[in-house]
Image 1 (cartoon, rainbow, N blue to C red):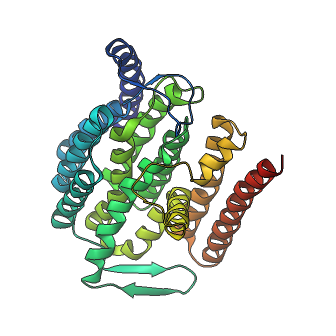
Image 2: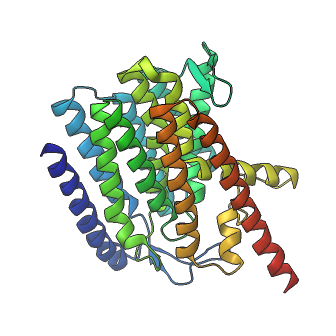
Length: 344
């Protein structure tokens, strides 16, 4: 009953909070006005992710202090400074250097408080890679990259919110199976909080998440496996694999786009429209279609990842095969749409 009450409150607080924020931001003129890089055409309230941050962090503190006594102050402090600088970025635009400094500081607080990955299971090999202190560097860049990757991918209606719902569902089931009580409760909060937001953000969106929401979610999904490692280290090598595949298509899209932009000699810290999901939208697909397209692929990989984590064995090959096939399919569809557009 405790979790049902917690999840219900999270959903209704998010849904009602976002509705109230839409009215507030519309009156105050906190609108995202379309420009030449935008995927939307009409001014839309932005910064709705502030509600996600508020509900999620409040619930996390209750869960971690009152129900499980597993609070990570590194996560709380990191999440707060990430949300703060991102909120200012939504309002006034903060330089890349300042944002990177804050992201690095947030990652460092987690490393000091919760530790880092020192071993990693390598899918397809059966080996566990012992990282030692090199794990500090890998964990640091994982956190910083996830913060920015999630932010980069929040460019069309529904895509970031749906990803959050699916990844949270994956974490909820994973934590339930492997008895990570605090993570189970927090994942449920994230699931229902983002679902409440998504009902307002689905195409055509009445509100945008903004950097305050996307950076917070990227940070949270990066830190969840580190929390799991600290809470229950007996299956620690598998946790990073699951964490990666729960957000795989966001990671793949951003890394591929960065690589292609570097090849072209572009300034990668400047906003652009080169992501695969953006290419699909600008080739004529609707926001709803593209968000659902990414979401359906993610749902399949989340299911495959959970199957692998629970049963291992032959399911490892199945997981790798599914990830490779769907990644190739995403790349093929994105490129074909753009080639067809050029021919028209």
